[in-house]
Image 1 (cartoon, rainbow, N blue to C red):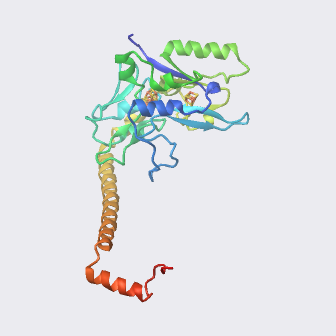
Image 2 (cartoon, rainbow, N blue to C red; image 1 turned 45 degrees about the vertical axis):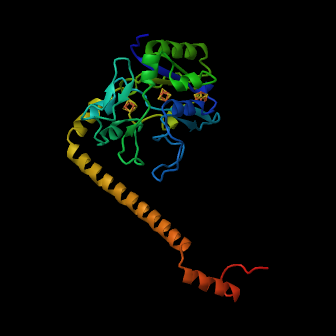
Image 3 (cartoon, helix red, strand yellow; image 1 turned 90 degrees about the vertical axis):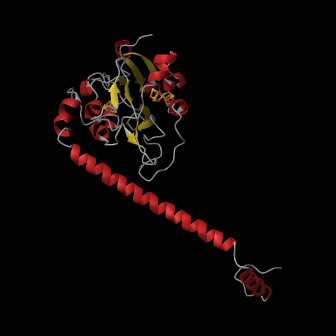
Amino acid sequence: MIYRNMSILTDVTKCIGCDRCVEACRETNHLPPDKPWRWLRNITDLSTSRWTTIERVKSDAGDRFARRHCRHCLEPACVEACIVGALQKTPEGPVIYDRDICIGCRYCMIACPFEIPRYSWEDRVPYVQKCNLCYERVKYEGKLPACVEACPTEATIFGEREDLLREARRRLATEPGKYVQQIWGEREVGGTSVLYISDVDLELTDLETKFRDETPVPLRTFKVLHHMPEVFVEMAVVMGGIYWVIERREKLAAERAAQAGEERGSASPDQEEEDADAADSGTTNGPKGS
Ligand code: SF4
Ligand code: SF4
Ligand code: SF4
């Protein structure tokens, strides 16, 4: 099937927070298990091992769950900001990333209004990571995105953007007392391919952005960003340097610990004899035999 604008609609009223979408994404994209890296606030934050995560939405009506991942903006600021074309908006809709072209400047991370792209600081050659809407899986294998396929409640569904907008409007009209009369993603920042409907206000969460109006972000960010290449290249060098120093220190500490262990394990025969004598005379610090 040829898609014009692959999209996802998440209905917050149906999400039970089971994390099956998170695990399906991890498995399909061969992402590693979560680790509590020092640069993460919470292990469940979006990260290089979590291209999608579940946000808890607090409200007077009780807690809700909403899935967070790349919104595949119709006019993506990350694509505009990438000076080498490592991020691309495909004709079918998903915004995809080519790590072989990426130079690690991280403009995309600064430009994204939803704070989505993550940087793999843990890798020797770090690169950017984010949801790709299972582009290849959908386009070449004819499958659903892994997260959508795994969802047991159909809280998150996949299709053409226009069809999903129609479905969202239908639900809002059928149960006007249940839903907030808004489709998140329909117009903000020029519109996104990931849409949400909900019975509580999602503007209370990180899902929303300070860019609430309909102006595409690239129009606002480009003027600023195109004056900044030197600054960010310098920043990239400095951050890379800091990372190298930290990693080097940790490596040296591990080597020293291993060396100390080896020295203890290979004490000289004379030293062993002295230790045995000391043990016999009951002068060691260890426990005495019974
Ligand atoms: S949400 Fe951010 S990373 Fe995703 S397409 Fe939009 S600007 Fe790019
Ligand atoms: S569409 Fe694919 S890459 Fe994106 S969150 Fe779902 S499973 Fe992960
Ligand atoms: S699999 Fe479906 S119900 Fe479970 S957390 Fe993900 S979106 Fe919600």
